[in-house]
Length: 139
Ligand code: CMP
Image (cartoon, protein in one colour):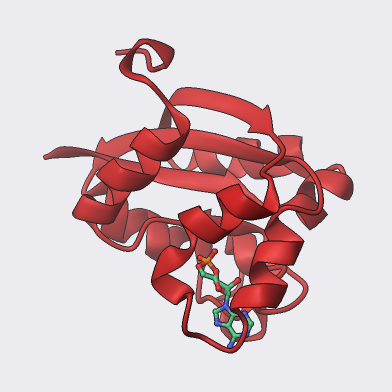
């Protein structure tokens, strides 16, 4: 069944001019882009987006990093999109990500792991709503 997920290209990959390379990978993987925008998160935005990790020791560094420069936010659609896309981008830690995955090829460490992806259908809906209104999505 067609599902939607939320993904974003993280600041370091934007700064390294990898937007085009990552978008090309996503499209050639069969994911339809329903919405896309480049924005810079405030520290407060990043804290809200990653609130689920508030108790984790890396929360401060992660939210500093995610608000350090522009990100590219996208909504993707495909059958079984949430689970398939997580497998497609590879493990959270680029060093453990399978060959040929986005995180393996464009990530440098667990924090700068190229892209974020929603971890469930429920969180995908929340994360899509964080960045996009319905009229910003096609299809
Ligand atoms: P992401 O998919 O954006 O979701 C939460 C992020 O927290 C994750 O990718 C990593 O970038 C980051 N993260 C997860 N575990 C660690 C860790 N042990 N140390 C630093 N950052 C982490």
